[in-house]
Length: 97
Image 1 (cartoon, rainbow, N blue to C red):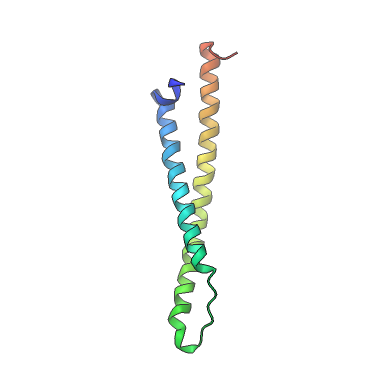
Image 2: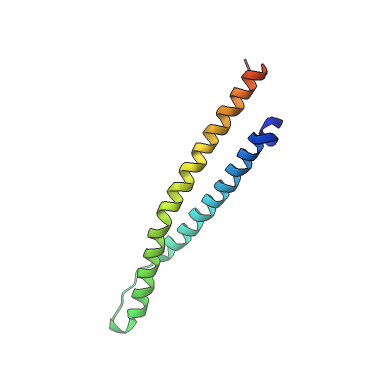
Protein backbone atom coordinates (compact mmCIF):
# COMPACT_ATOMS: atom_id res chain seq x y z
CA UNK A 1 0.00 0.00 0.00
CA UNK A 2 2.95 2.31 0.53
CA UNK A 3 3.58 2.17 -3.21
CA UNK A 4 0.54 4.39 -3.74
CA UNK A 5 2.01 7.14 -1.57
CA UNK A 6 5.66 7.07 -2.66
CA UNK A 7 7.55 7.55 -5.89
CA UNK A 8 5.99 8.33 -9.22
CA UNK A 9 2.85 6.35 -8.36
CA UNK A 10 2.43 8.65 -5.37
CA UNK A 11 2.64 11.68 -7.65
CA UNK A 12 0.01 10.17 -9.93
CA UNK A 13 -2.22 9.53 -6.91
CA UNK A 14 -1.76 13.10 -5.71
CA UNK A 15 -2.59 14.39 -9.18
CA UNK A 16 -5.73 12.25 -9.22
CA UNK A 17 -6.78 13.61 -5.82
CA UNK A 18 -6.32 17.22 -6.97
CA UNK A 19 -8.23 16.65 -10.22
CA UNK A 20 -11.04 14.83 -8.40
CA UNK A 21 -11.38 17.63 -5.84
CA UNK A 22 -11.55 20.22 -8.63
CA UNK A 23 -14.16 18.09 -10.39
CA UNK A 24 -16.26 17.87 -7.23
CA UNK A 25 -16.01 21.63 -6.68
CA UNK A 26 -17.19 22.28 -10.25
CA UNK A 27 -20.06 19.82 -9.80
CA UNK A 28 -21.12 21.53 -6.58
CA UNK A 29 -20.90 24.97 -8.20
CA UNK A 30 -22.96 23.81 -11.17
CA UNK A 31 -25.52 22.32 -8.82
CA UNK A 32 -25.76 25.61 -6.95
CA UNK A 33 -26.23 27.51 -10.21
CA UNK A 34 -28.79 25.01 -11.46
CA UNK A 35 -30.84 25.37 -8.29
CA UNK A 36 -31.04 29.10 -8.94
CA UNK A 37 -32.01 28.45 -12.55
CA UNK A 38 -34.96 26.31 -11.56
CA UNK A 39 -36.65 29.28 -9.90
CA UNK A 40 -39.54 30.30 -12.12
CA UNK A 41 -39.65 33.89 -13.12
CA UNK A 42 -42.76 35.60 -14.30
CA UNK A 43 -41.45 38.79 -15.79
CA UNK A 44 -43.14 41.86 -17.03
CA UNK A 45 -41.46 44.50 -19.18
CA UNK A 46 -40.06 46.34 -16.15
CA UNK A 47 -38.13 43.29 -14.97
CA UNK A 48 -35.91 42.83 -18.00
CA UNK A 49 -32.79 42.91 -15.82
CA UNK A 50 -33.93 39.69 -14.12
CA UNK A 51 -34.22 38.03 -17.53
CA UNK A 52 -30.68 39.17 -18.34
CA UNK A 53 -29.49 37.61 -15.08
CA UNK A 54 -31.13 34.32 -16.04
CA UNK A 55 -29.51 34.39 -19.48
CA UNK A 56 -26.12 35.00 -17.82
CA UNK A 57 -26.78 32.09 -15.47
CA UNK A 58 -27.60 29.75 -18.34
CA UNK A 59 -24.43 30.92 -20.08
CA UNK A 60 -22.37 30.03 -17.00
CA UNK A 61 -23.97 26.60 -16.88
CA UNK A 62 -23.16 26.02 -20.54
CA UNK A 63 -19.53 27.07 -20.02
CA UNK A 64 -19.14 24.57 -17.15
CA UNK A 65 -20.26 21.55 -19.15
CA UNK A 66 -17.02 20.89 -21.06
CA UNK A 67 -14.63 21.36 -18.09
CA UNK A 68 -16.79 19.08 -15.94
CA UNK A 69 -16.79 16.35 -18.59
CA UNK A 70 -13.06 16.75 -19.20
CA UNK A 71 -12.13 16.58 -15.51
CA UNK A 72 -14.41 13.59 -15.00
CA UNK A 73 -12.83 11.70 -17.88
CA UNK A 74 -9.30 12.58 -16.76
CA UNK A 75 -10.07 11.56 -13.15
CA UNK A 76 -11.54 8.24 -14.32
CA UNK A 77 -8.63 7.52 -16.65
CA UNK A 78 -6.12 8.36 -13.94
CA UNK A 79 -7.73 6.05 -11.40
CA UNK A 80 -7.73 3.20 -13.92
CA UNK A 81 -4.07 3.93 -14.75
CA UNK A 82 -3.09 4.09 -11.07
CA UNK A 83 -4.82 0.81 -10.23
CA UNK A 84 -3.33 -0.90 -13.28
CA UNK A 85 0.18 0.30 -12.49
CA UNK A 86 -0.20 -0.63 -8.82
CA UNK A 87 -1.26 -4.17 -9.75
CA UNK A 88 1.52 -4.40 -12.34
CA UNK A 89 4.12 -3.30 -9.79
CA UNK A 90 2.77 -5.80 -7.27
CA UNK A 91 2.92 -8.65 -9.78
CA UNK A 92 6.40 -7.61 -10.87
CA UNK A 93 7.60 -7.59 -7.26
CA UNK A 94 5.87 -10.91 -6.57
CA UNK A 95 3.59 -9.57 -3.81
CA UNK A 96 0.39 -10.25 -5.77
CA UNK A 97 -0.45 -13.67 -7.13
